[in-house]
Structure formats: structure tokens, C-alpha cells
Length: 355
Image (cartoon, rainbow, N blue to C red; front, side, top):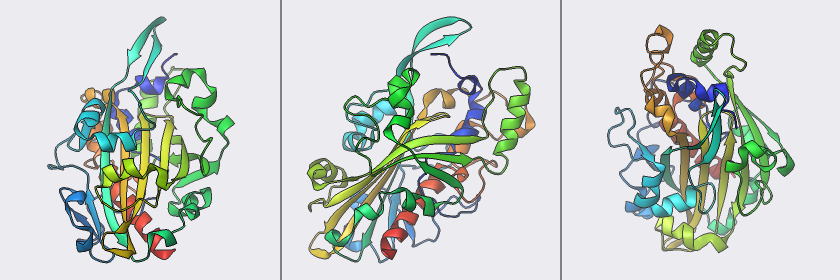
């Protein structure tokens, strides 16, 4: 498989593309905020599972993304193999499929073909909130469709596709992204292809890099496209999900969106929401949400490239990914992973409340 030019370009620029992540709903946020929408709306805690669900205030969301030092460049990112060892229940539930491994494939550079192993680093955010009605009264099918996704973020455009349109299902060069047990989207409530156009200064960085690479056959796109499947999880998966949430009531169901193919930098992503009756109060539902995003490790390894170009100096990968760059902007996912994750969880909580 020949590496596309966009994967050969410096990681400093690739980070501009990495922030344009999956088509999961996001709420408006100013680029400078990088915090919860309001002090009591989204409350940062060291661990959401350590807080008694009964102590969660109405309308409040507990949130953690494992960042003890938010200003540190890669704080909150964990190597994929470490993730499997340190947080095994989380990795089991949030990997694209059971037994997922870091990709192995062949690459051709300057006419030479050789095997390549790709390392990944993962960002995980976790949220928890309470819905004031019984779990069995929540219709998860109402959220597992294209129409619901389309309403959540106007900056991202979506269209339905079939399993036959899914890139890993049909392209031999994408075989490393195939599910071993079934084709992607075969069991999905919705199979979605999405496009996000880069916002703010990010397109300027892409234009400059493309000019510097003038004469090359391929150019970096000023958009990110990605494919995902959205499906409802049944109570039969409750044992694994209870091990994750650490709430000792039955799991009535879950909602899962898996991003399995992206045209730029990101390898996979997953949003998962787990629904359980409130302990000692079945008239309420505890919803625990997770967002996992896996980024190619080499994006973060080459930090100094393009530093000589003034407009790209603030495009260091970790800065952009973690929302600490002047290039973070807009009302959608270009704000960086922490803002994106907070707003995604808050948007989902609002949608559940309104149903």
C-alpha cells in the first residue's frame, strides 16, 4: 500500500487535520474557553465512578478526561497498549471491536515496500448525569438514526451509506480496518458518511503546506471525511458495561457510535452511552457516557517540523489536539478534544432531557 501524501507530511500540519474528528454532536463554544459551559453544568471530578450517583444535581454532568495537568502538551493521552493494561474494562468497551490491535500493513516509499506497525495514543473522556425518568421509558432507537445526528451540529454534513459503500469492507488497502467478525454497518441502526470542513485558520495552514509541497501528486484536503456506524446495544451486553460503569444495577441498554474509517490521521473513535436505573430509585436513570479517540502516534512524535514557518508555529500537534493553540477556533470540533468532548456529552444530555 502506498502512503498518501497527506500521511507523509509533517505532524505539525497533520494536527490541524486531527482536530477535525468524528461526526458526533457538539455544542457551541468559544475557542478561548476550553472549560465547561458553566461551573455547575459540567463539573470536573477525578473519577465519575467514585461519586455516588444520588449526589449528582439535577442538570449537572460529572466529567473527567484524566488530565491532571491540562497545560502539559500530551497530558490526557495514553498509549494504546498502556490503555489495555491500565484501564482494561474501558479499553474493552471502547476499542472498535473485541481484540482490536494497533494496525499492521505495508507501505511503499520511494519504490521500496516494507511492513509497518502503527502505534496509537488514545484520548478518553467520561461523563455521568441523571435523567429524571425510568430507564425503560427511554427509547434508544429514537437516537440511533441519521436524522438525530444531522440535528446536532450544522458544521458537519452527513449522508446515509450502505455496508457496500464502507471503505474497509471493499478496499483491500484498508483491510487493517476491517472487523474480523462481521462487515461494518451490517448490524447498524445507521451507517453514516460525514464531512467536516476545517474552520478558522486551519485551512490557511493547509494551503501553505500544499504550496510548499508544490509539484506533488496529492494534496492535503481542507476537510475531513469519516465513516461510522450507530447502533443500539441490548441488555445482553450488560455484564461488560456494568464492569465499566461500576454501578450495580442492570443495564437496560446502550447507544454506540463507532468511527472506523477517517481520511486523515485519526484511526478510530467511539462514543458510548450506558443506561442504568438509579440505585435505590428506579424512577431515575443514570447515564454514563464515554468518548474515545485514537490518534496515530507519529503525529505527536515529530514536533519541530514546520516550526520555521510563522503561520504554522502554533500547529504543534499536542497543542492543537488538546485545545491549547491559537489555531483552535469555531463553534464545532476545531476547538480541540477537551472542549469537543465536554460539549458532546452536554449536547447528548440535553437531547435526552427533551425527549
